[in-house]
Amino acid sequence: MTTNDSSVEDAFRILIVDDEPNIRSGLAKGLEKLADVRVAGSVNEALDCFDEDSFQLLIADVRLPGDRDGLDLVSLVRQKYPDTTAIVITAHGTVETAVEAMRRGAFDFITKPVDLNLIREQVSRAIEHHRLQSENRLLRNRLADVGEVSGLVGSSPALRSVLDQVRQVAGTDATVLIQGESGTGKELIARAIHDLSDRASGPFVAVNLGALPESLLESELFGHVPGAFTGAVRQKPGCFEQAESGTLFLDEITEIPAKSQVDLLRVLETGQFFRVGGEELLTSDARIVSATNRPVDQLVRNGEFREDLYYRLNIVPIRVPPLRQRRDDIPLLVDHYLNHFCTRHRRPVKTVDAGALERLVGADWPGNVRQLRNMMERLVVTVPGECITADDLPDELTESAGREESTEGRTLAEVAEAAEKKAIREALKANGCHREQTARALGISVRTLHYKMNRYNLQ
Ligand SMILES: Nc1ncnc2c1ncn2[C@@H]1O[C@H](COP(=O)(O)OP(=O)(O)OP(=O)(O)O)[C@@H](O)[C@H]1O
Ligand SMILES: [Mg+2]
Image (cartoon, rainbow, N blue to C red; front, side, top):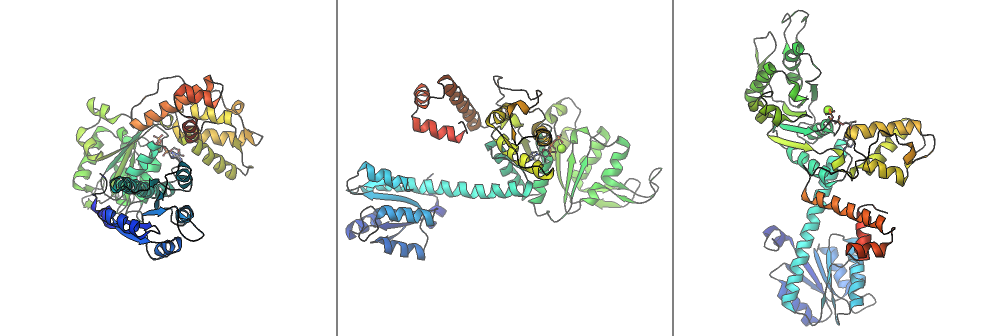
């Protein structure tokens, strides 16, 4: 999948900048099948073109007339138009010029004499690169929105994928079943689905089915009429009525008794229900999002949860991975909650030192984000100094290091990254943090090691 994506092809514009007319026209001719091509003979002419139009790709000769050369042009363009990919043309193909061009943000370089077939290939690659970049940027923007709207903190691939599903499903009325361990953020996610949907201006009604005695459940869900039962003095609307044109969040859905499962299924199928004791048939258009921390499929197999209801509720399943499977989120959450609780408890801002952070990141977190949140609040209140160290952390924080981690629910990329990070950490330790030795031991270059250490936050 490269350049024959028609929408890309339509939109793709290349500006070729060279002072030699025959190179300009040769290139333009050679590339006209791949994109819309314009040409310019100098840096100033090129900048004028950018003023008038947008270009996804700039191909510039390094040697240009005037006091600014092609490298300056690349710097200028990359600064002002970061969406533009750049390729430079060097006369002698000197490595230094190429390196300098890359340093200034060029994606690739071409050497003279120009080989049209090769250039077409390079340009195709640049187009593909550009397409991916824009896609990533779009995705990031959209995800940032979800994060902002929902207050969900984290940037791990696992959480991003959840946020992406949230965004996708928010635009529909499909029922969503959110599954995940206790404290992983299921309720926040349910709210995010509501807040990002067309129903955002309508009500979000949450009902915890595990907290209601069976006798009250029906009246809570469907409401009742006066005299429906002892104590029912006034008419009371149920959750389905309250959530009209909004979202009804059924929390702990697996705790609903067998009899009510039938009633619920009927409402989901027909959209119609009666208040308890009532005769008027009411219609509900509430969107249903439910959640559970129990393995529903197993409960279905055991006959504890109706299979037909499960299918109705589970049109779109969202699984929220436990915190220990997305440790990249931990530093961000720690930061977030430190700031949050220091502000709330009017304390000067505290930090955690590297040792404490390492323990926090390596811990088990059976109570997931809720446990981490509570611990950060406790630390803010109880640690007198400004810096939280590993000694301040309670013993209950159990390391899970060394234990075989489950790969369930993780993408291959996440599993691979976790393994890579672990290998690098161990190699660093084994080589006394000596970078050249570590790189050699791992069979990678020192540059790659630095890059990966940065990426994984290993200092
Ligand atoms: N990604 C996150 N960013 C910020 N806060 C989070 C995140 N995930 C969870 N929380 C916080 O953690 C706490 C628990 O979240 P929530 O109540 O949504 O969990 P839950 O999955 O519904 O748990 P349970 O199954 O026990 O009901 C809440 O205070 C919530 O604000
Ligand atoms: Mg909950």
